[in-house]
Amino acid sequence: MNLSNTKKLINNSSAVRFIITGGINTIVTYAVFFVLSFALISQISYTISYFLGILLSYVLNTVFVFRSNFSAKKLFQFPMVYLIQYVYGVITLTIITDYFSISPRIAMIFVIITSIPLTYVLSRWILTRRS
Image (tube, rainbow, N blue to C red; front, side):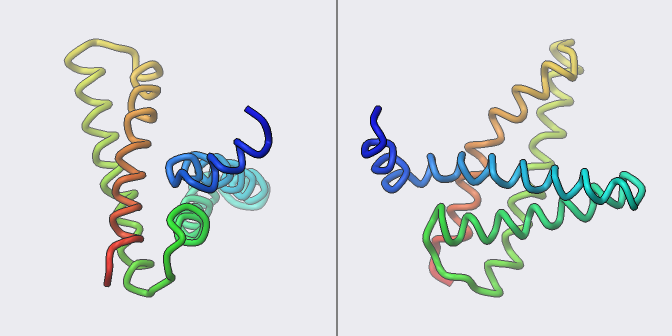
């Protein structure tokens, strides 16, 4: 795939843009956590970086992924994506580890992979529907 085709794929696919922004968000929030962890306890560093990650995700998904408009309503609804993703992850992890006796370290890979489409659909629903 040449550069021109790559640009077309990125431009024409919100799913590809979603994966890219997820990677960017992960790197940025880890960097924030890393820096803060030198001055704060890890739980506070994690909490700050987690909430900044949700805010960054809202901005990147609004502007780059779904190319929609900012609104206060969407900003306040957007964290529900992560609440639902969290509940899904806890339930799925519990089922896989408790009922199938799979190691949590392996089960978490499945949880992460399967939560990506869920997060994409929920984000798209919140950010692209008419207010």
